[in-house]
Length: 155
Image (cartoon, rainbow, N blue to C red):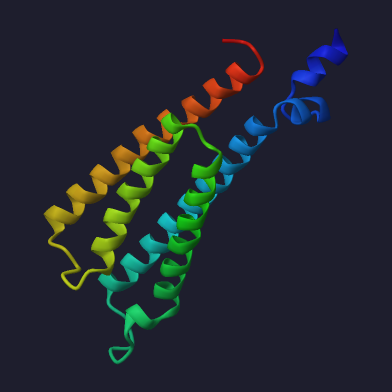
């Protein structure tokens, strides 16, 4: 009985061998989520740098290290999203696509020529982004875990 239960663990060799697709889904989800958090953090830091106004007035914040980091993490997120799409079922792919679109909309506003946006628009946009990301990430997490139950025969 103990051996049977240990084989159900996603970390066991038996589970990994029998449920390779699910292991790929979990790994892809973790990588996607890590890159999403990094991209949000880098773009937020870049946004703050622009809003704060660079101490060196001659320096272009769009050409500085925070701008570079924002672009780099966004590109890494794009790659992670494409990799995740390769292993995720359609229902989960649509959720990750929505998450990426929400992030990208905000990212585009930060990088637009019209930035900084008026405070009312910016506040509404950030609140909407936060609420949408919370809802979508909860949904995708539940979907990945429901897939977990399906693969081990609990649903």
